[in-house]
Length: 384
Length: 194
Image (cartoon, rainbow over all chains, first blue to last red; front, side):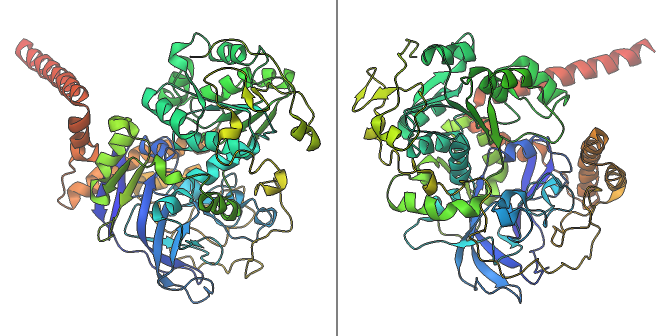
C-alpha cells in the first residue's frame, strides 16, 4: 500500500509499505478515505518528538471504511464508514473508567505519561497513522465511530481531533456567561476553540497570532476580535488594556511547542532543546489572564520541562487546566452542533492533496504557503 | 486594532439566575455591544448552546460511571512477535501496543539503553533523540543498500516551495551555492598551498 514515510527532519515521502494485518482479536483494518495533517504533526516533521523512528507513518486524524475485523469485534462490520478518534484507548482501565480516554494506561508500553495515539512516534505507543491507504485500528469496539449519514466526510475527519480538541480547550477554560476569552494561536485548533467559546456563552473572544491571513480567517469564521502580536509592544499589557486593566477571564494555549514571539523561548526550546519547546503562549497566558482566571492548554509540548512563570501563576491564583482531548466523549454533542448548523468544521479545509504529494503538502502546511489552514490528504482510489 | 479601554460591567440577569454571579470583564450589555465593531454575542448562531455545564461532554473532568459501553473488563493481551521497549515506570507491559518499526541497528542499541532510565530522567529523552538522529543516517544507508538514492529535494517539498515561494526557493539555492562554492574554494586553496 502507499503510505507517508518519515525519513528525517523535514523529509517525508509517499512510499509503498506492507499492508497492516490484524494483530489483536479486537483489531480492525481501515481503508482510509480522508487523512488530515495536524499542526502537531509538524512537531514530528521537525524531528522534535523523541523516539520517532525512520519509516514511521504519521496521521492521527482520519476516516475510513472497515476492510477487515478481528474475531472478537462485535460493533463494526466490513463496509462501515467510520471516523477514528486520534486516541488509541481501551475503555476499561483506571483512567478510561473516568472517561479520560486521552490518558489510557493500556495501550502505550513506551510511556506512562502519554496515552496512545495513531502515527505519533513510539512515545505515543508506536502505532502507524492514517496518512496511508490502510491503517490498523486496535480495540475497534471502543474507538471508531460510524459516521452518521447526514455528516459529510470532511466534517467527520475534523471530528477526529480538531473540533473536539478546540471544544475541550474552551470547556477547560471554564467559561461562564459573558467571560472574555483569549485564544493564543489561529491555527485549526485555535480557530475551533474560538468558535466553541461562543457556544459556552463567552461575551468576548479575542484571538492572538501573527499570521495575517489566519487572523483574517478566524475573524470571519469565529466572529472574534484579533490581535497581531507583532504589532503590539507587549502582549500581556495590550490584552489588559483591552480588558479594563484586569486581563481576560481565561486564556487558551492552542499553539504548543513551536511558538513564535519570543527569541529566548525559540532558541532555548526549539533550536537548543534546553526546554521542551517554546512555551511562549503559556508565558503570555499566565501574564495576561486576570487574577483568579483560568488557563487552558491544548498546545503540545515535549516530555521534559519548560520555562514558565509559575510564581506569577501562584500569586495570581490561577487555575491551569490541560489535557489531550478525550475525543470519544465529545462526539455525540459535537455531531449535534454540526447537525444544528452551529458549527461547520469543514470550512477550515483549504487544501486537498493526493497522498502521493505528501511531501509538498507538509511543506505548504509547515511554511503557511498559499494561505493554507487545513490540509486533507486523499489516498489513491478514493473519490474526492 | 482595538486598544480602547472598556468599562467593567456585571453579568447579565440570566447568568445570575444560573448562579454565576462573579463580576467578569464583560464585553456587552443585554442586546447592545459596548463598542462599535465588537460582536454582540447573541447574534452568533449557537451562542450559549452549551452555557449549561451539564451539556458540556467533558464536564466534570472525571465522569463516572463512564457512558461508553465496553465489552471487556480489560483487553485481551496482544501476542508479542517483535521487540517492544517498555517504560520502567510501567508495573507491567500494557496489553495492547504498536508493532511497527522495532528497534534495530545502532539506534536500536541506544533506544534499549534509554529505556533503562525512567521517563522522569532527562537522559531517557536525550538518548532517544540521539538515537533518532542516528536512525536518520541508518535510513539513508538502508535506501542506498536497496539501490534507492533518496531525492532529498522532493522529500523536503521543494516542488511546492518553487510553486508558492519562488523567492525563498531561489534564495535557498543561492545560499546553498555560495556555501558549496566557498567549500570548494577552501578545499582547492588548501591543496594548492600544500
